[in-house]
Image (tube, rainbow, N blue to C red; front, top):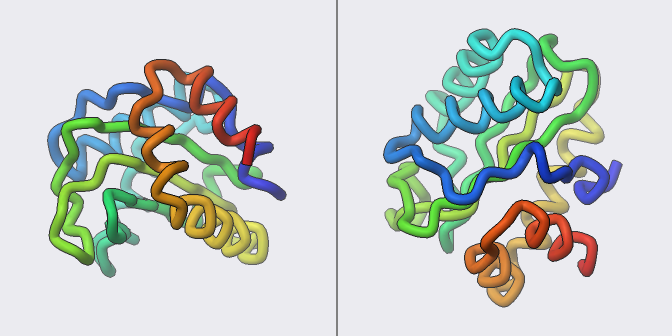
Length: 149
């Protein structure tokens, strides 16, 4: 499944209000709950935090991809958050993260989960694409940016 197929305006938050790693994860999980993508936000939050405690998903260049496998989702789901000011996410480069991609998959869907992580990594290698996302003023602009990729 292509990442673009997971991106809808109701799973995008600009700007994130969160100021810490757990707050970012909570805000994105709550966004998925509000969008009707998950029911048990607390269990999903705990699954992502457990995964995060195994090793930070804060990458480099302002990108973070918190993710988890959980039986609380029937299929792959994605939430995107933009934090123009940046949030300390224990990133590999020690810099704050600005672009957050929360990815959840059921344990039985390792293939699509890995493909989605790979696609996010590929798309975010483009600094110009990341700038477009960072400068977006609405969820609609984010959806349109992905549609152009």
